[in-house]
Length: 434
Image (cartoon, rainbow, N blue to C red; front, side):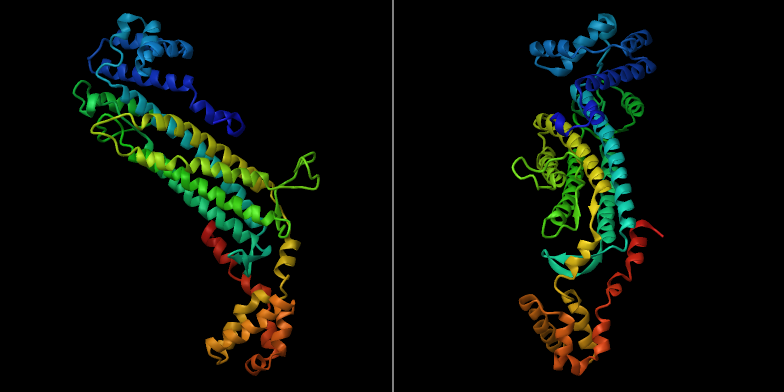
């Protein structure tokens, strides 16, 4: 991922230096286990560990790979240059390249997941703070983009909190599922390596041994992981779209923070655009782009092929780096989002009481009017508001058929705004706990 959409800590996980360091640890831990089992001499395992402070030369490994056309062999050749030929002859004993590659990839994905979990916790904290801040800030709820009935801005934030909280649970599950390792040798039968080596290596790296790995770790695990990232990205876009709609000039119920000195347009000095939300919408597309290739990686030939490899070399760093950046950007956006309660109230009253139509409909049915007739009575007065700019309550009071069923006080009571927010505390308790 380009530096513009990257953060250093996540980028570091996917650097060649980190990858080769993990490869070394896999090989060194395997040597330890084999020495404990008496398969190789203890002094040879110790000789390998003496290279633990070596800065592996990425350029040198690339130089060797240009000849060998094999990245793991290139690394092992470079490692031998540091530990000596005698010690190196016991490195990679009974192992296959996938043991190193797949185990390393899952170490990187679990580390990436840990950063993403922390990102989501920060986002949840921001959403919760804003939810309680605007718990009773009334705004109009919309369906199909059209005024529906009153809600609160706090409920909007709470809705996004609940969605992201579900995503956090999904991510934790995905992390658990991806945190497996395999040191099982060719076709995964342990023919040339003791299963206890795998157990030791996995324990040292914080992984669980893959129950059955053929020659690769099953890719349904990775599909689950990247699908989860895709769902999180869609939730980011869900929030971003809401903010973009709220910032439209004719709505302007909320606005991204506009910093001193910030410019909105090279041509129009008046512009203040929802650039962060639009950026998040685009970044969400990039993360979701990895989901289908990850699903297609599940189907491999027999015990292994490498059709998944090129895909994962790209989508693993790109999606985790992008999502890490997007979550941090969204957290900052939520933290500084400017809310305009007065505009919310003005927008809700723009159609002069129209949003109370359901309450009047229900009151008429409770007064003995059939639902069909009640709907007709309410709708014919509502259309005058749409088409003529009339006041809904005034029109109802002037309608003889409505007044035959409802008194003036009964009609007026149906325009009480507090009616629509009376269960906010109940909803908050469900979302955030008592």
